[in-house]
Length: 208
Ligand code: FE
Image 1 (tube, rainbow, N blue to C red):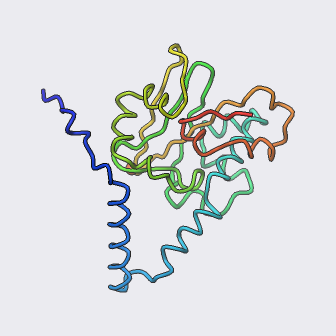
Image 2 (cartoon, helix red, strand yellow):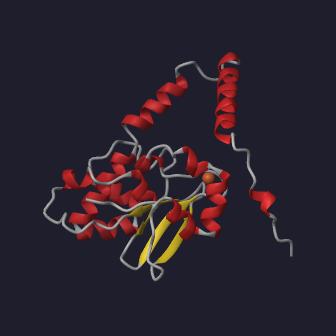
């Protein structure tokens, strides 16, 4: 059996800048070849900033916190739950064909990753942040999730079980965070405003 050495996890410190330069070069080439137009990328980014984003996930979580029946549907069949609410059309497309939700409780904490690349539930969480796609985050979250979460500022009690969900091109996971105490009287809109993308990725909790 070969045990990978540390060099396997050595990546360039400038990898974000290097990736950005590669993307810019690729975009320029695709425009030059006539594959996409100069506004194509802007249109896609605008779509994921205004129609498909973490505000959809926050709405689903807030509803689940207020409505136990909706919560069980969300956990059983996320796509069916999306259809119950007034959501943008195409929630089950655009990288959200099969979405699954893992529930955080006082004894279980869930973390979503994609070890292979960057699979992410775009319709409910939007476009993933750079660090989600970073090779070091992906490798370390699978190997030592408790340490990585602590580096995010989330120190979980040792007795809390951590479950790491690896998304794929077929199934994309996200997290139903725990409702913070003292928010029981709040409306769905007020609750939704507390819910961050990070809490639905499992790298933070929802706080009042
Ligand atoms: Fe992926």
